[in-house]
Amino acid sequence: MALLLPLSGPAAAVGRDLLDAATLALFDSPETDLVLRPRDTSGTGEGARAAAREILGEGIRLVIGPLFAGSTRALAPLVRPARTMVLSLSNDAAVAAPPVHVLGFRPEEQLERILRHARAEGLARIALLAPDDAYGRRVVEAWRRLAPVLGLDPALVLTYGDDETELSDRLRPFTAYDARRRALAARIAELEVRADDPAVRRELQELRSRDTWGPPPFDAVLIADGGLRLRSVAALLRYYDAGAGTVRLLGTARWLEGDGEKALVRRPEFAGARIAAPDLDLARAFAARFRDIFGRDPAPVAVLAYDAVAAVVAVRRRADRLDPRALLTPRGFRGFAGILRLRPDGTAQHGLAVYEVGPAGLELVDPAPTRFDFAAGTPSRGGSSTVANQKRTMASATR
Picture 1: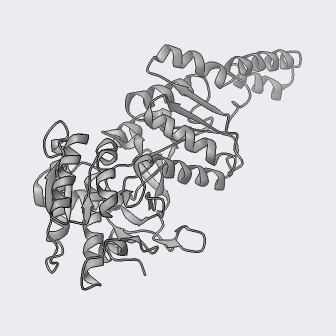
Picture 2 (picture 1 turned 180 degrees about the horizontal axis):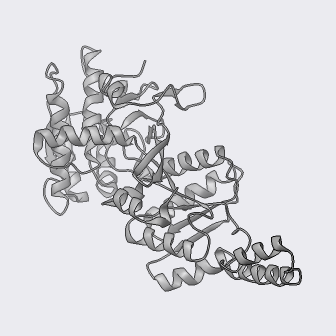
Picture 3 (picture 1 turned 45 degrees about the vertical axis):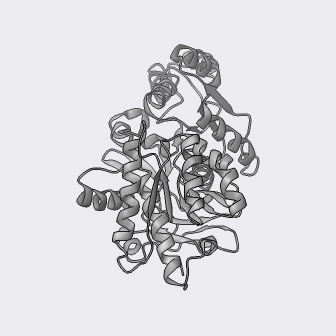
Protein backbone atom coordinates (compact mmCIF):
# COMPACT_ATOMS: atom_id res chain seq x y z
CA MET A 1 0.00 0.00 0.00
CA ALA A 2 1.14 3.51 -0.74
CA LEU A 3 1.74 6.27 1.79
CA LEU A 4 1.30 9.74 0.30
CA LEU A 5 2.80 12.12 2.84
CA PRO A 6 4.46 15.56 2.99
CA LEU A 7 8.02 14.32 3.42
CA SER A 8 9.44 17.64 2.27
CA GLY A 9 8.22 21.20 2.58
CA PRO A 10 6.78 23.04 5.60
CA ALA A 11 4.97 19.96 6.96
CA ALA A 12 7.90 17.56 6.57
CA ALA A 13 8.23 16.98 10.33
CA VAL A 14 4.59 15.89 10.56
CA GLY A 15 5.06 13.74 7.47
CA ARG A 16 7.99 12.01 9.10
CA ASP A 17 5.90 11.27 12.20
CA LEU A 18 3.17 9.81 9.99
CA LEU A 19 5.66 7.61 8.15
CA ASP A 20 7.21 6.40 11.40
CA ALA A 21 3.78 5.68 12.92
CA ALA A 22 2.78 3.65 9.85
CA THR A 23 6.07 1.77 9.98
CA LEU A 24 5.56 1.10 13.69
CA ALA A 25 2.16 -0.47 12.95
CA LEU A 26 3.85 -2.93 10.57
CA PHE A 27 6.63 -3.55 13.10
CA ASP A 28 3.95 -4.47 15.65
CA SER A 29 2.58 -7.05 13.19
CA PRO A 30 5.74 -8.86 12.02
CA GLU A 31 3.80 -11.74 10.44
CA THR A 32 2.22 -9.54 7.77
CA ASP A 33 3.35 -9.57 4.14
CA LEU A 34 2.21 -6.02 3.50
CA VAL A 35 4.74 -3.49 2.24
CA LEU A 36 4.59 0.29 2.59
CA ARG A 37 5.57 2.41 -0.40
CA PRO A 38 6.07 6.01 0.77
CA ARG A 39 5.73 8.84 -1.75
CA ASP A 40 6.38 12.51 -1.11
CA THR A 41 3.57 14.98 -1.85
CA SER A 42 5.52 18.02 -0.59
CA GLY A 43 2.22 19.02 1.00
CA THR A 44 0.93 20.41 -2.31
CA GLY A 45 -1.78 19.50 -4.76
CA GLU A 46 0.67 19.10 -7.62
CA GLY A 47 2.91 16.91 -5.47
CA ALA A 48 -0.08 14.73 -4.58
CA ARG A 49 -1.05 14.37 -8.25
CA ALA A 50 2.48 13.39 -9.22
CA ALA A 51 2.66 10.83 -6.43
CA ALA A 52 -0.76 9.45 -7.39
CA ARG A 53 0.28 8.99 -11.03
CA GLU A 54 3.36 7.09 -9.87
CA ILE A 55 1.54 4.67 -7.57
CA LEU A 56 -1.27 4.09 -10.06
CA GLY A 57 1.36 3.17 -12.62
CA GLU A 58 2.60 0.55 -10.18
CA GLY A 59 -0.89 -0.94 -9.83
CA ILE A 60 -1.33 0.02 -6.18
CA ARG A 61 -5.01 0.08 -5.19
CA LEU A 62 -4.82 1.28 -1.58
CA VAL A 63 -3.43 4.64 -0.43
CA ILE A 64 -3.01 6.05 3.07
CA GLY A 65 -2.80 9.84 2.89
CA PRO A 66 -2.48 12.58 1.85
CA LEU A 67 -2.52 14.71 4.97
CA PHE A 68 -4.18 17.86 3.66
CA ALA A 69 -7.61 18.43 2.16
CA GLY A 70 -6.14 20.33 -0.79
CA SER A 71 -3.82 17.45 -1.68
CA THR A 72 -6.68 14.97 -1.29
CA ARG A 73 -8.92 17.04 -3.56
CA ALA A 74 -6.16 17.26 -6.16
CA LEU A 75 -5.60 13.52 -6.51
CA ALA A 76 -9.27 12.47 -6.36
CA PRO A 77 -9.91 12.72 -10.14
CA LEU A 78 -6.95 10.41 -10.76
CA VAL A 79 -7.83 7.65 -8.29
CA ARG A 80 -11.58 7.45 -8.94
CA PRO A 81 -11.38 5.94 -12.44
CA ALA A 82 -8.90 3.38 -11.12
CA ARG A 83 -11.15 2.64 -8.10
CA THR A 84 -8.16 3.06 -5.83
CA MET A 85 -9.21 3.44 -2.20
CA VAL A 86 -7.75 6.49 -0.48
CA LEU A 87 -7.65 6.80 3.32
CA SER A 88 -6.91 10.51 3.61
CA LEU A 89 -5.67 11.80 6.95
CA SER A 90 -7.60 15.05 6.47
CA ASN A 91 -10.61 15.90 8.63
CA ASP A 92 -12.44 17.85 5.92
CA ALA A 93 -15.70 16.13 4.97
CA ALA A 94 -15.86 18.23 1.80
CA VAL A 95 -13.22 16.04 0.13
CA ALA A 96 -14.84 12.74 1.18
CA ALA A 97 -16.49 10.83 -1.67
CA PRO A 98 -15.77 7.11 -2.09
CA PRO A 99 -13.35 5.70 -2.97
CA VAL A 100 -11.81 8.70 -1.17
CA HIS A 101 -12.36 8.49 2.59
CA VAL A 102 -11.22 10.92 5.29
CA LEU A 103 -10.02 9.47 8.60
CA GLY A 104 -9.53 12.68 10.56
CA PHE A 105 -11.48 13.70 13.66
CA ARG A 106 -14.04 15.99 12.09
CA PRO A 107 -15.23 19.04 14.07
CA GLU A 108 -18.79 18.11 13.07
CA GLU A 109 -18.73 14.83 15.01
CA GLN A 110 -17.09 16.51 18.00
CA LEU A 111 -19.84 19.12 17.97
CA GLU A 112 -22.54 16.46 17.92
CA ARG A 113 -20.90 14.45 20.71
CA ILE A 114 -20.61 17.37 23.13
CA LEU A 115 -24.07 18.73 22.32
CA ARG A 116 -25.78 15.38 22.85
CA HIS A 117 -23.91 15.03 26.13
CA ALA A 118 -24.97 18.52 27.23
CA ARG A 119 -28.61 17.86 26.34
CA ALA A 120 -28.50 14.61 28.31
CA GLU A 121 -27.22 16.65 31.26
CA GLY A 122 -30.33 18.84 31.06
CA LEU A 123 -28.81 21.90 29.35
CA ALA A 124 -31.45 23.29 26.99
CA ARG A 125 -30.28 26.82 26.13
CA ILE A 126 -26.92 26.40 24.42
CA ALA A 127 -25.13 29.11 22.44
CA LEU A 128 -22.31 28.72 19.92
CA LEU A 129 -19.28 31.00 19.61
CA ALA A 130 -17.12 30.28 16.57
CA PRO A 131 -14.30 32.07 14.72
CA ASP A 132 -14.93 33.38 11.25
CA ASP A 133 -12.47 30.98 9.62
CA ALA A 134 -12.71 27.69 7.74
CA TYR A 135 -12.98 25.65 10.94
CA GLY A 136 -15.57 27.94 12.46
CA ARG A 137 -17.69 28.00 9.33
CA ARG A 138 -17.80 24.20 9.27
CA VAL A 139 -18.90 24.14 12.90
CA VAL A 140 -21.59 26.78 12.31
CA GLU A 141 -22.94 24.85 9.32
CA ALA A 142 -23.08 21.65 11.37
CA TRP A 143 -24.70 23.53 14.27
CA ARG A 144 -27.50 24.83 12.06
CA ARG A 145 -28.24 21.30 10.87
CA LEU A 146 -28.06 19.71 14.32
CA ALA A 147 -29.61 22.34 16.61
CA PRO A 148 -33.23 21.81 15.49
CA VAL A 149 -32.82 18.04 15.88
CA LEU A 150 -31.69 18.52 19.49
CA GLY A 151 -34.29 21.15 20.33
CA LEU A 152 -31.80 24.02 20.39
CA ASP A 153 -32.10 27.52 18.95
CA PRO A 154 -30.05 27.50 15.69
CA ALA A 155 -29.87 31.32 15.73
CA LEU A 156 -28.06 31.50 19.08
CA VAL A 157 -24.69 31.93 17.34
CA LEU A 158 -21.97 34.56 17.41
CA THR A 159 -18.99 34.51 15.04
CA TYR A 160 -15.91 36.69 15.48
CA GLY A 161 -12.56 37.62 13.99
CA ASP A 162 -9.18 38.43 15.53
CA ASP A 163 -10.08 41.92 16.83
CA GLU A 164 -10.53 41.50 20.58
CA THR A 165 -12.15 44.93 21.00
CA GLU A 166 -14.75 44.09 18.40
CA LEU A 167 -15.33 40.72 20.05
CA SER A 168 -15.88 42.41 23.41
CA ASP A 169 -18.34 44.88 21.87
CA ARG A 170 -20.33 42.03 20.31
CA LEU A 171 -20.28 39.78 23.36
CA ARG A 172 -21.75 42.49 25.58
CA PRO A 173 -25.25 42.44 23.99
CA PHE A 174 -24.99 38.71 23.21
CA THR A 175 -24.72 38.00 26.94
CA ALA A 176 -27.45 40.57 27.79
CA TYR A 177 -24.94 42.18 30.14
CA ASP A 178 -26.50 45.65 30.21
CA ALA A 179 -30.02 44.28 30.71
CA ARG A 180 -28.80 42.21 33.64
CA ARG A 181 -27.01 45.27 35.08
CA ARG A 182 -30.28 47.17 34.95
CA ALA A 183 -32.08 44.22 36.53
CA LEU A 184 -29.54 44.29 39.39
CA ALA A 185 -30.08 48.01 40.01
CA ALA A 186 -33.86 47.54 39.96
CA ARG A 187 -33.67 44.63 42.38
CA ILE A 188 -31.46 46.57 44.81
CA ALA A 189 -33.83 49.53 44.68
CA GLU A 190 -36.79 47.23 45.34
CA LEU A 191 -35.12 45.70 48.39
CA GLU A 192 -33.79 48.92 49.89
CA VAL A 193 -37.28 49.99 50.96
CA ARG A 194 -37.41 46.86 53.14
CA ALA A 195 -33.85 47.05 54.46
CA ASP A 196 -35.01 46.81 58.08
CA ASP A 197 -35.62 43.08 57.48
CA PRO A 198 -32.45 41.07 58.37
CA ALA A 199 -33.02 38.61 55.51
CA VAL A 200 -33.38 41.50 53.06
CA ARG A 201 -30.20 43.10 54.38
CA ARG A 202 -28.30 39.88 53.80
CA GLU A 203 -29.62 39.69 50.23
CA LEU A 204 -28.69 43.32 49.61
CA GLN A 205 -25.17 42.69 50.85
CA GLU A 206 -24.81 39.78 48.45
CA LEU A 207 -26.29 41.70 45.50
CA ARG A 208 -24.01 44.72 46.04
CA SER A 209 -21.00 42.44 45.52
CA ARG A 210 -22.26 41.46 42.06
CA ASP A 211 -22.28 43.12 38.63
CA THR A 212 -25.49 41.59 37.25
CA TRP A 213 -28.69 39.91 38.35
CA GLY A 214 -30.37 37.10 36.48
CA PRO A 215 -28.96 34.52 34.04
CA PRO A 216 -27.59 35.24 30.57
CA PRO A 217 -29.66 34.11 27.55
CA PHE A 218 -28.02 30.67 27.66
CA ASP A 219 -27.11 28.07 30.26
CA ALA A 220 -24.16 26.70 28.25
CA VAL A 221 -21.91 28.07 25.54
CA LEU A 222 -19.84 26.03 23.11
CA ILE A 223 -16.61 27.76 22.06
CA ALA A 224 -15.34 26.20 18.83
CA ASP A 225 -11.81 27.58 18.99
CA GLY A 226 -8.37 27.02 20.48
CA GLY A 227 -5.18 28.73 21.55
CA LEU A 228 -5.06 32.43 22.43
CA ARG A 229 -8.43 33.24 20.90
CA LEU A 230 -10.11 30.59 23.04
CA ARG A 231 -8.58 32.10 26.16
CA SER A 232 -9.68 35.60 25.14
CA VAL A 233 -13.26 34.47 24.51
CA ALA A 234 -13.47 32.59 27.82
CA ALA A 235 -12.03 35.57 29.74
CA LEU A 236 -14.51 37.99 28.14
CA LEU A 237 -17.44 35.71 28.90
CA ARG A 238 -16.40 35.68 32.53
CA TYR A 239 -16.01 39.47 32.50
CA TYR A 240 -19.62 39.76 31.32
CA ASP A 241 -20.88 37.33 33.98
CA ALA A 242 -21.56 34.65 31.38
CA GLY A 243 -18.61 32.33 31.87
CA ALA A 244 -17.47 29.54 34.16
CA GLY A 245 -19.47 29.49 37.38
CA THR A 246 -22.49 31.04 35.68
CA VAL A 247 -22.88 28.83 32.61
CA ARG A 248 -21.29 25.59 31.46
CA LEU A 249 -18.50 26.03 28.92
CA LEU A 250 -18.32 23.38 26.20
CA GLY A 251 -15.63 22.71 23.62
CA THR A 252 -14.09 20.49 20.98
CA ALA A 253 -10.69 18.80 20.76
CA ARG A 254 -9.35 22.04 19.29
CA TRP A 255 -9.04 23.20 22.89
CA LEU A 256 -6.20 20.68 23.33
CA GLU A 257 -3.98 21.87 20.48
CA GLY A 258 -0.44 22.83 21.49
CA ASP A 259 -0.21 23.12 25.28
CA GLY A 260 -3.98 23.41 25.50
CA GLU A 261 -4.56 20.93 28.32
CA LYS A 262 -2.04 22.59 30.63
CA ALA A 263 -3.38 26.05 29.81
CA LEU A 264 -6.96 25.00 30.57
CA VAL A 265 -6.15 23.65 34.02
CA ARG A 266 -4.25 26.79 35.02
CA ARG A 267 -7.08 29.22 34.19
CA PRO A 268 -10.16 29.66 36.40
CA GLU A 269 -12.29 30.69 33.41
CA PHE A 270 -12.26 27.04 32.26
CA ALA A 271 -13.15 25.41 35.60
CA GLY A 272 -15.83 22.79 35.06
CA ALA A 273 -15.79 23.12 31.27
CA ARG A 274 -16.41 19.98 29.22
CA ILE A 275 -14.99 18.95 25.87
CA ALA A 276 -15.44 16.11 23.39
CA ALA A 277 -12.19 14.42 22.38
CA PRO A 278 -10.70 11.04 21.47
CA ASP A 279 -9.82 8.74 24.38
CA LEU A 280 -6.88 10.54 25.99
CA ASP A 281 -5.57 7.44 27.77
CA LEU A 282 -5.22 5.69 24.42
CA ALA A 283 -3.62 8.76 22.85
CA ARG A 284 -1.08 8.90 25.67
CA ALA A 285 -0.38 5.18 25.33
CA PHE A 286 0.34 5.64 21.63
CA ALA A 287 2.56 8.66 22.30
CA ALA A 288 4.52 6.66 24.89
CA ARG A 289 4.96 3.74 22.47
CA PHE A 290 6.10 6.09 19.71
CA ARG A 291 8.46 7.92 22.08
CA ASP A 292 10.03 4.66 23.24
CA ILE A 293 10.89 3.71 19.65
CA PHE A 294 11.73 7.03 18.03
CA GLY A 295 12.82 9.20 20.96
CA ARG A 296 10.41 12.06 20.29
CA ASP A 297 6.75 12.94 20.74
CA PRO A 298 4.55 12.32 17.70
CA ALA A 299 2.27 14.84 16.04
CA PRO A 300 -1.29 14.11 17.26
CA VAL A 301 -2.42 13.05 13.77
CA ALA A 302 0.21 10.29 13.69
CA VAL A 303 -2.11 7.97 15.62
CA LEU A 304 -4.40 7.84 12.57
CA ALA A 305 -1.55 6.62 10.35
CA TYR A 306 -0.82 3.84 12.85
CA ASP A 307 -4.46 2.80 13.11
CA ALA A 308 -5.01 2.91 9.35
CA VAL A 309 -2.12 0.53 8.70
CA ALA A 310 -3.15 -1.70 11.62
CA ALA A 311 -6.69 -1.92 10.23
CA VAL A 312 -5.36 -2.95 6.82
CA VAL A 313 -3.19 -5.60 8.49
CA ALA A 314 -6.27 -6.95 10.30
CA VAL A 315 -8.21 -7.17 7.03
CA ARG A 316 -5.30 -8.83 5.25
CA ARG A 317 -5.07 -11.55 7.90
CA ARG A 318 -8.59 -12.74 7.13
CA ALA A 319 -8.26 -13.10 3.35
CA ASP A 320 -5.99 -14.66 0.75
CA ARG A 321 -5.45 -11.26 -0.80
CA LEU A 322 -5.91 -7.67 0.27
CA ASP A 323 -9.35 -6.38 -0.72
CA PRO A 324 -9.66 -2.70 0.32
CA ARG A 325 -13.46 -3.00 0.29
CA ALA A 326 -13.21 -5.17 3.42
CA LEU A 327 -12.29 -1.98 5.28
CA LEU A 328 -15.92 -0.88 4.89
CA THR A 329 -17.17 -3.35 7.51
CA PRO A 330 -19.89 -1.71 9.64
CA ARG A 331 -18.31 -3.32 12.69
CA GLY A 332 -15.35 -1.02 12.32
CA PHE A 333 -11.97 -1.33 14.00
CA ARG A 334 -10.35 -0.58 17.33
CA GLY A 335 -7.08 1.26 17.61
CA PHE A 336 -5.12 3.81 19.58
CA ALA A 337 -7.62 6.43 18.39
CA GLY A 338 -10.53 4.37 19.73
CA ILE A 339 -13.20 2.76 17.59
CA LEU A 340 -13.47 3.82 13.96
CA ARG A 341 -15.46 2.83 10.92
CA LEU A 342 -15.78 4.15 7.39
CA ARG A 343 -19.19 5.54 6.53
CA PRO A 344 -20.89 5.25 3.12
CA ASP A 345 -20.40 8.99 2.47
CA GLY A 346 -16.61 8.68 2.75
CA THR A 347 -16.24 10.15 6.23
CA ALA A 348 -15.04 8.21 9.26
CA GLN A 349 -17.01 7.76 12.46
CA HIS A 350 -15.07 7.76 15.73
CA GLY A 351 -15.92 6.98 19.31
CA LEU A 352 -15.33 10.12 21.38
CA ALA A 353 -15.22 10.72 25.13
CA VAL A 354 -16.25 13.75 27.18
CA TYR A 355 -13.83 15.29 29.69
CA GLU A 356 -14.24 17.94 32.37
CA VAL A 357 -11.56 20.48 33.23
CA GLY A 358 -10.69 19.87 36.88
CA PRO A 359 -8.00 21.26 39.20
CA ALA A 360 -5.66 18.34 38.48
CA GLY A 361 -6.31 17.99 34.75
CA LEU A 362 -8.94 16.60 32.43
CA GLU A 363 -11.27 14.17 34.18
CA LEU A 364 -13.30 11.60 32.27
CA VAL A 365 -17.05 12.10 32.76
CA ASP A 366 -18.51 10.20 29.79
CA PRO A 367 -16.33 7.38 28.38
CA ALA A 368 -15.79 6.81 24.68
CA PRO A 369 -17.90 3.96 23.29
CA THR A 370 -16.19 0.65 22.64
CA ARG A 371 -18.42 -0.68 19.87
CA PHE A 372 -20.91 0.52 17.28
CA ASP A 373 -24.66 0.14 17.68
CA PHE A 374 -25.70 -1.17 14.28
CA ALA A 375 -29.43 -0.64 14.74
CA ALA A 376 -29.06 3.06 15.52
CA GLY A 377 -25.95 3.61 13.42
CA THR A 378 -24.24 5.21 16.40
CA PRO A 379 -21.52 4.24 18.88
CA SER A 380 -22.64 2.15 21.85
CA ARG A 381 -21.19 2.39 25.33
CA GLY A 382 -20.45 -1.28 25.88
CA GLY A 383 -18.50 -0.51 29.06
CA SER A 384 -15.67 1.87 29.85
CA SER A 385 -12.76 2.15 27.48
CA THR A 386 -9.42 1.26 29.05
CA VAL A 387 -5.94 1.23 27.62
CA ALA A 388 -5.41 -2.38 28.66
CA ASN A 389 -8.56 -3.59 26.92
CA GLN A 390 -7.92 -1.54 23.82
CA LYS A 391 -4.34 -2.72 23.46
CA ARG A 392 -5.46 -6.35 23.63
CA THR A 393 -7.76 -5.76 20.67
CA MET A 394 -5.72 -3.17 18.83
CA ALA A 395 -6.81 -2.80 15.24
CA SER A 396 -8.90 -5.97 15.28
CA ALA A 397 -12.41 -5.77 13.88
CA THR A 398 -14.93 -5.34 16.67
CA ARG A 399 -16.86 -8.48 17.48
